[in-house]
Image 1 (tube, rainbow, N blue to C red):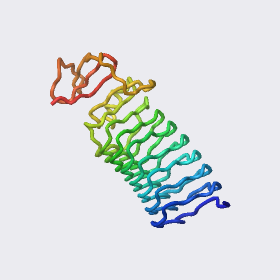
Image 2: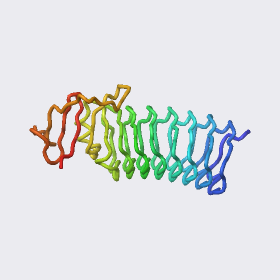
Image 3: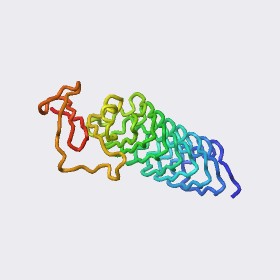
Image 4: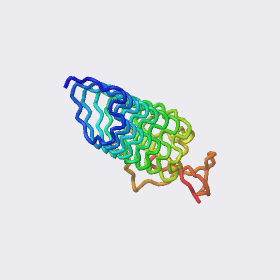
Length: 257
């Protein structure tokens, strides 16, 4: 009960370890503490923990769920790299940044809601999370690093609440389905997102970012006008990419074959 910290590499490679109880007085978990503990299936982290070192749970492929303590404000580099069995994850409200490769290769994750306080996501943070189907990026997000969501091939919807387009690194969404995945952006920001790196996605739809139901559509919505990518007014569907404005104020980029 008197333990307050666990040092670097303390349980490194203990692949037969399946469960562990940490005392309430723990405040810090060091670098690579549980790295390659592939047999670890569950772990409860005490509320007093405020620091988790890089690669702390690297390669813990048997870990299926984890709740991080409220005192954690950032996720270090490689912390959960290769935790392929992780299907659910609860991030505390105080998180403001996610380090590089933090959740890379977590192919079991199916959805991810990032806390409102997150402002930056470093490079390759969620690379290879191939089962991730939906993603919500909060209003305060300002930076998405290189290849941050690369090869998240299962994504079908991304909701971005930021009125100002976040800075985005190269290949941030490389390997994602540019036609299958719909990018939802705040009303009035369509053009800014289309002209940014987010323009990688062919289907960009505006939504009311202040509303309760972000996916509600009306059966009475009608097409108001249609344009080519260079802004030329079109009289009807024309082969290639068309920009269509609807009566509810939304704008969508539509591929016409």
